[in-house]
Image (cartoon, rainbow, N blue to C red; front, side):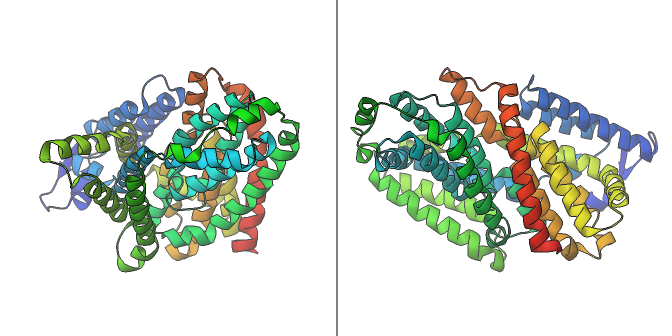
Length: 456
């Protein structure tokens, strides 16, 4: 139950009744979130449905009112995701992603060892410039095609691309959903991520490439006939719409430029991305009549993963419910007690715990929960400006932790889905045995990195 004062401001007008008592409200909020997370992890019910039902329960059971629930949604993140999905959804019809992959395969003359490295690099770069979920959706089908042509087992290629997508996505604001959440919540710019997470991404990517090459790459072999068949592919034939490619690259360049310079002028990344998506739609439809334009806009908006968008909206409301109930402040105080108020130790705890928990649950809901928890520690460390290193620990831990299991990141789930449809199922336990120790090794590198950058 709630009572509201007609002040016109939802954030100050909501006062919990004492029907449950304050502790009761905390219990209800925690129970709702826990039940939602159990269903999200189990994947028995669609996660967007679970998140929206959980958000509704937060309102119906009196933890939030509707105004507060909407206030909890980070629309900068929502706009950023929608805008980038529109741009990439239109851009992919130009054939540019297939062009790059085929060109890469031909450039190494079908050598499997070199192809493993090149496809991983392509995945990492696209994951940084676009986002890792979209990247694997575009690159994995091509990888399956190339490995089938070379008569190779695609398993290790797909594992390498999972790692490359999460490591590459870690480099930028838009590359990985956890970064989008952190950047929007803390008002970090595109350049902030380039300066703080991109160097770690580059270092870890080089280490992983060397590791994959030494352990698996040097054992990959194929026949000369298979190579010859692959070399018959013509990259230019993949470019099915060159005018669309030019428009897409023009808009993408403007958007990335907007990410870099917009922050200093009060323009959020969400505004830049959504405007870029609208501009690309305009450039793509303006020559046609109204009915054709409507159909093309419907098609472009259909490229948006609305399930993901509504999952984020429900998740934001869920997390805001436990934040508003005081649960995260309590947990933040427990974290400070555990670390004795030592900033470096707190950072290391966040780094390692983020990685391990992100390997167990999807790193998106985990980061959404951690953000207000870390914010609650700011006063103890002398203000928000002093906890900046903790945000980078969270970003590194969550993004790298996404490599720990097949359900740890949305990109992983997408790769597994494509692989299973192609008859190359990635079993949970098999992947876990390989990926989890490798993930811990990357976190050890990140540990040294954050110590050197922030705590020495």
